[in-house]
Length: 72
Image (cartoon, rainbow, N blue to C red; front, side, top):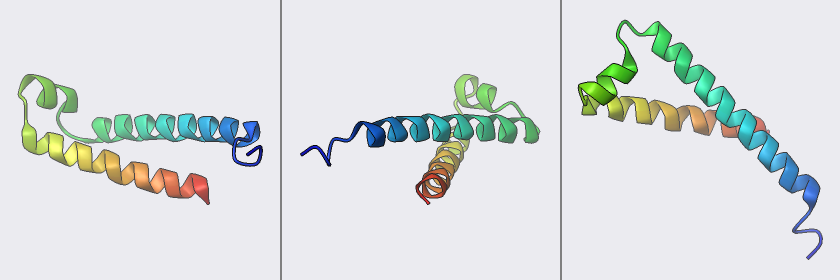
């Protein structure tokens, strides 16, 4: 049971999760700056569902790529 619940693995998982989340946020801000319109205004104020679907798919895709790169 001690091999399954190793503190080093738990700390590494938390650190890599934080790193992956921060990379995802930074990349989302970069994409927001590269688009000709304000993503937040389009999503929240205008409730553009098509853009929300694209942004969500983008976030999922980036998350999969970041997770695969962190795992190795």
